[in-house]
Length: 265
Image (cartoon, rainbow, N blue to C red; front, side, top):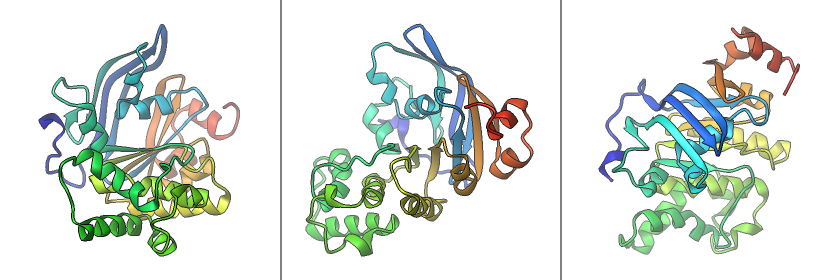
């Protein structure tokens, strides 16, 4: 609905802004008064021990957590200046604006081509495209994820036949035709080998600037390599948020230092 329409923004404006965000699973509080500003067009990583709230925060941005009837949320999250919890905002509009990539590649049991077109068909239902327009959408999305040259002769083959690295790139490509502003990535390389991980990290840098990317990772080396800013979370709270290089070289908080040096987590 109108609440999630993208406003014209400057490059230095915020893509995501959380204010006093709290979340409970039943009686268990998982997020505590989260205040975060994530800059548009940048790659930001989230690190912290298992169970610290990283993935919960990610899933709150595009409202996946709301599918669970025992989840309660207070506070606000703005995406591109619009509150995702506003009464006039429909879930489908949030998902259009905010794409999500999961730990394991999850291509649909369809052809490569139909995977890329799937999101467009859902979000632009009734907007019938010519075959030529569809071809342009497929090629553009696959070019952006550096996959076109590998699969241009396999577009009618099952996506599940691709390698894990190619499947994960395809899952990213599937998001692009609906023109999201933000890409959320929850451990996107955890199922990949080192070569596949390197390829996805290269892709992230290629997408930088065109999209705002927020990546949750348990791999601190990956956070150093593949992000410009870094957020450290502990026990449902944001402890530190700064430039990635500064986070790892001169962290401001003792908890951050202890985690980076491997004393827990």
